[in-house]
Amino acid sequence: MKKDITNRDDLYLLVSQFYKKLMVDKDVQHFFHKFNDPKTLEHHLQVLVDFWDNIIFYSGTYQKNAMQPHIKLNEEMPFNQNHFKVWLNHFHQTIDELFLGNNAEVAKNRATSIATVMQLKILPKT
Ligand code: HEM
Image (cartoon, rainbow, N blue to C red; front, top):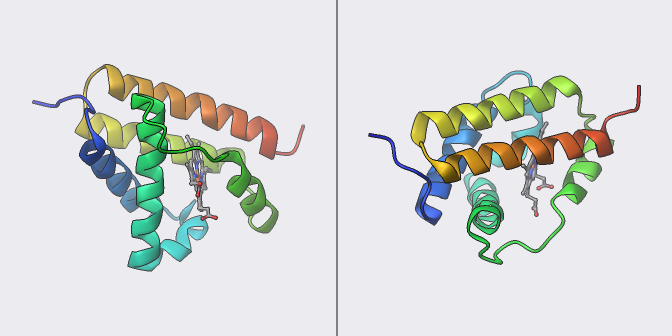
């Protein structure tokens, strides 16, 4: 039986499984090369746990602007619409494989809306 996302261990499982998918996906893996170093990856996963902990449980654990590193990244490695589609598909799929419940839905909905705003800010206007 699948359960809902209820704590930081659940979030760690989510982000670590999610990154396993991103890091072998040929469409987006070039963004994630620096996480082939296990220490760099571990630190980043903890930041992501803080980020999602803050969104789902209002923990106050993430107070930075998550948009900023992506704006900078886009200057070096341009993002396109397909990158966002692939990123979101893996995120939604990882959640559906592992969890079921209200918090799981909240996480998917928030990821979709943040990705929408990120695209509006980052992608070139057509
Ligand atoms: C095409 C889609 C995306 C790609 C390729 C991508 C890639 C990355 C990469 C490479 C980093 C590390 C940046 C660094 O260390 O300088 C990062 C950080 C991060 N990403 Fe994304 N990202 C994407 C979309 C998203 C979305 C939609 C969200 C939120 C729902 C998100 C949340 C975060 C957060 C919270 C961090 C950590 C920022 C920090 O260090 O404070 N990303 N992303």
